[in-house]
Amino acid sequence: MTRVALIAHDEKKTDLIEFAQAHEAQLREYELIATGTTGKRLMDETDLEIERKESGPLGGDLMIGSEVAEDRLDGIVFLRDPLRAQPHEPDISALLRICDVHDTALATNLASAEFLIEGLAD
Image 1: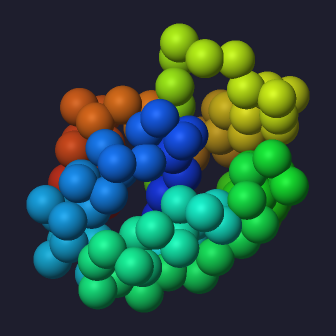
Image 2: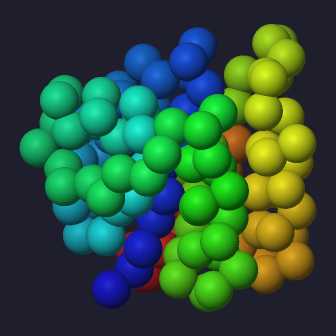
């Protein structure tokens, strides 16, 4: 089954929830994982089943990165806040780097997220 991670910085969580609600039928076709707080909000505000990892600052981004390194993820939607520094920036950089190393699809904004979930559906 296609496996997709959903991650969003605090300022982008609402955008990700709205995206998930708009694409809930498609996302239901995938096995979903998410970082802790994002996953909880998605489960509270949609009917999607989501495997939750730790919160990003507590290692969740690295946990998702390990899934990439073990070839257990087909894609990641990671809505990042480009205007705010993150205290766990090294973890975020590591996640982006491992996606490049393993050629894993990575969407960092809503436009690319649309392409990612549609592309994985083919």
